Length: 135
Length: 68
Image 1: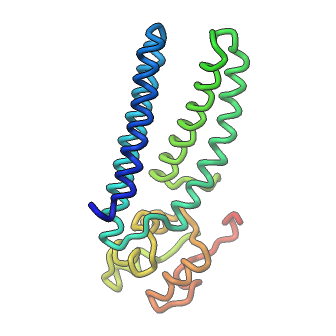
Image 2: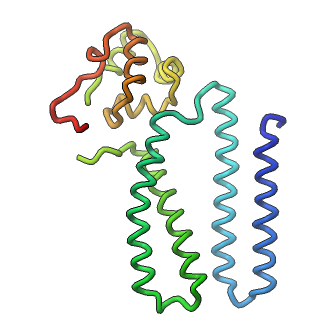
Image 3: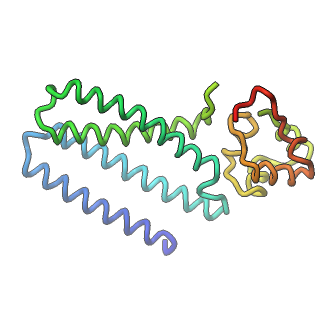
C-alpha cells in the first residue's frame, strides 16, 4: 500500500477531476447525453487500464521483472510512428466529412480521441504479435 | 535472424523466465526472440550468448536476407 501511495493518489485525483468535469457536463449540457456517455465510457476504460497497469507494475517489481525493456520501448516507437500515419488519414476523413459535425469541438474531440485510440491499438498489436519488421 | 536459443535453453535446462531474469528483460521479449520476431540489440545478444557460454554468432545466425 505504501509503495503504491503515489499511484493511488494520482488515480484518485484523476477520478475526481474527470468525475467533476463529467458531472458538470451532464448537468449543464443535457442535450449532449450521447457524447457524454461516450466520454464516460472512455474515461472509465482509461481508469481501468491505469489501475491494471499499476497492479502489473507492482507484481513485476515484486518478482524483480523490469517494467520496461528494449522490446517494450521499441513497440512504443513503432506504435507511435504507425499511429502518426493512420492519424493523418483520420484527420483527412474528418476534414472531408466536416459538414457532418455540428460543432468544431466535436470534430477536434473525435480527432484527438481517435488518434489516442489508434496509438493504443497499434501498441496492443505490437505487444501481442511482435510483428514489427515488415517483410 | 534465426537463433538457437530454444535449443540451448533445453540443453542447459533453463526456463524462459529464468533466462529473462538472467539477462534483465521481460519474459515476452525472450518469447519473441525465440520466435525470430524480434532482433535483439548487440548488448542483449551479448548477454544471452554469455548465459550459454558461447559467442554471439553461435547463438544468433545472421542471414544475408536479414534487413538492417
